[in-house]
Image (cartoon, rainbow, N blue to C red; front, side, top):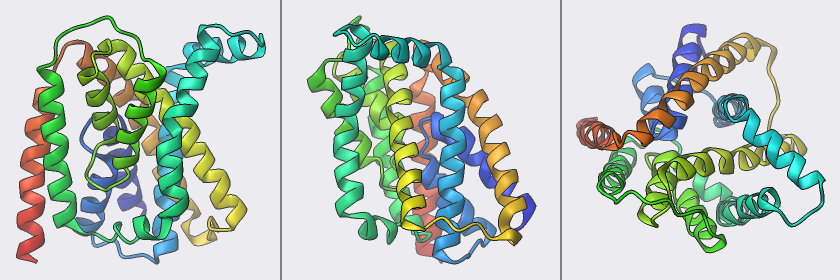
Length: 264
């Protein structure tokens, strides 16, 4: 993988992890356009590293929330922080089960299948359009809501389904306050990403190649910086109900991807 390609893909990952346009879908499209055809293990390694970079940027942006949650947990009381943490755990269950029992099947979908990405982007566009038209509320995330949002996160494993778009849209459609929906959506993914990295380390799947160290590091830095900017921007966009513009974008990119896939 070339250094410039790694930086470009890192920026794409950082921006699209938080913006509701599907980071996995754009990474697949980016690899197809750039002609990146590494070994599957190397490709998976690079993707995991980029996701870790965006998880780290989430922790930085929501550092105050994370510290409050940790203080609440270590107080060993049944308080708002401990309830929120339990909701995060509940939201992780669907995606964790899918990843545990269907890992090989999921990996087979990440092979520059631009037609699949295109159709999934159109589904993302529909979700964003519906969420943008939802009424304003002040409802909190309930335990049942957390599980339903977790199901959306599990479905968003498919390349082209935006994780943030699916989870935020599901939250808003359930009647949850937009600010709380965004906060929950961004925080709920961090344990999954960190857990996936621990599993890959234990399984020996992550094997750093000295030749790939520089481009992977460059991709990590690019994804982290872009993630910081995109996360902050996305919080403002959801508050202002601007999801319709991303719906149009996803729809157009989806149609383009489908056309490109059939053309090739």
